[in-house]
Each structure stands twice: as C-alpha cells, then as structure tokens.
Image (cartoon, rainbow, N blue to C red):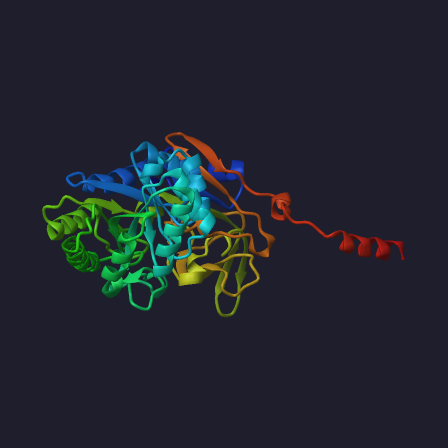
Length: 427
C-alpha cells in the first residue's frame, strides 16, 4: 500500500498535487510519502513483535538523512556498508548500538571509525577481514563485536546481479568453512563473537529460500555452541521483495510466521535488514516530457530524467510502472520512455502501452524509492536532482537540487596547464 493516488484524474502524494510540487521545484525530482514510509516500517517491524528482534534499515537502498531519521524515531537501526554511510547514520541521529556494518571490502579507516563509534557489530565476510578487524581493535584498545556472514549456497530465485547467497557470489564465508573461521575469531583477543549473519539476495518473492537458509544457520549455531561459542544474535539480512509489475511477494506477516515456525522457541535476538520492502513503493520519480519522437519503428517519449537518475531499468532491465501525472483520456500508444543521456541503454521503459504524451506533460515513475537516488550519478555532467518528502498537506525539500558549480566542486586545474593556456592566449 502507498499514498500515491488520483483525485479527479490528477496524481496526488498524500494530500498534495504532484504537479504543484513539480511546478514549484522543477523536474526531475524524487518524491517520498512520509505516511507510506512510516506505515511500511511499522508493518515490517510489527510483524516480529512476538520475537526479540532489531530492524536495521538497509540504508544502501536509500540513504537520505530525513528518511534515516524517521526510522530512528520509530525505534529502528541501520545496516551500513561504508564509513560514509556510518557518518550519515550518526548525523541522522541513529543510535550506534543499533548499527551493523556489512560489506566485503571494509577499509581500515572505516573499521577504526566504527569501533570508536561503538556500533553493535560487524558482519565480517572473509578470513583476512577477521584478522584485520582484530588487528585494528587491539591497536586502538577496543573489543570488536562480530558475526560472520555465512554463505549458505541457497538459490534466492532472483536476478543474478542481486543474488548474494550462492557459492559463486563474492559475499560471505562458505558455510562449510564457517566453524573453522569462527574458531579463529574466538581465539583472538580483539574480537567478541556474538552472532551469525546471512543475506541471500534482494527482491525475493518467495518465503522458501529464507526458510532454507535459516535451517542451515540453525544447524551451524548448534555446532558452534557444541564447541563452546555462544551465539546471541542471528542476522537474517533483508531481501523481501515488492510489487513492481506482476510480482506477488509475501507480506511481512507471512515472512515472520515462516521464520518463527522454523526457528521455534529461541533465546536469539533476530536482526533484519529490510530496505526495498520499506522504501521501494514509498517513492516515485517525477519527470517531464521534453519531446515526442515518432519513427517508422516506434514512438519515443524523451523525458528529462535519465539513467543517471534511475539506473535500475538500464542495469537490470527492471520494470517500473509509468503513469501520467494528469490523466487526459488520450489515445493509447506503444512507446519507449527514454532520457537525454548519450547511451542507447538510457531508458526508463520500453514498448510500454500508455496514454499519448505531449511536451511538458509530467509522468511518474513508480516504485522508485529504493535504489533510485542512492545509485544516481552525474554522468554526462548532469547535476543530481532534488528529493522531496510529503507529510499530509505539506512538502519539504530533503535534498537540494545540484547546480553546475556543484559538478566541479573539488576539481582544480594545475598551474602548468594554466600557464600553457596563458601562452596560447598571449600568442
């Protein structure tokens, strides 16, 4: 459920006409519904109310500080994958004891930063990282709490680019090697082994893979306790999917029931890292038609948003619903919705049946709240667009639109190049 709806053929976000926001702030822009964000977080978190748990929002899906602040106010934590994300989370007011640090390539400076901050735990992903984390912890006189991210070799049945739990994936430590690596970690003075972690993929639309992974993790935890390693936390990651087109993913309540049934009575504290399922359908991308371009083969609608603003269609060939901001009752046509980037892969939709559009019409790219702005770039020297949050009948800019000066901030031309330029001008 989300709070984007039509009133008399005009798209609203909660109580605000989308066209009003676009007219005042320009396009393209990302637009989020506060009510939807809050509702989705509470539904997910509430599904596990009968179990000891912590919901750590996967901030790689959307790292805007206003959104992080909202979830922190609702009692959530965050799952981070970089020092920059840790900085953002702290600035947003997330409690350090509600932060878990994942990722295969944690840099020494980031490990030290997180240790000094006092985060809940690290999800370590390789034998060398275990040793490096211990080295850093001993050097600065801190104890690093950790879980090992285990790769259970479970097929998540999702896009191969967002599958993370198979043997061929770069993530985690093979479950068959886990006991050995846990024994190593438990023997090191700078480390405190507290958990087991797993994340098998993103945009999962079935409960089965989660249950299969949990079954393997339960056996591992039993084996660890048999050799004297106590586990207090079980991190099941994220990955629960949403509806983009025709998908029918399980809702959080069904997911929670399946987990509780398989886990049974337990003294473990569960950690979840949802991202897309909370923010995906809580955000949309608003873009304006620049040109219509009919050819002998097809119709193109050229809009002012591009692959640098929303990469998922180009990267994964992902589907996003495209809706006119104002339904005008025009004839239906089959069209490609494309952007201004100089790449053939710059498209938001292909072969889409939709109402005929005209220049200056606004369209909404739906389900764009996850991996939208967070994956955006300035390719083709296009400034990053603004982000807006609606709450009731008011809206707030939660990230300013960049300008041309922002594009070159931090760049410089060495003196020797300036001297050559002066000679050219003098000559």
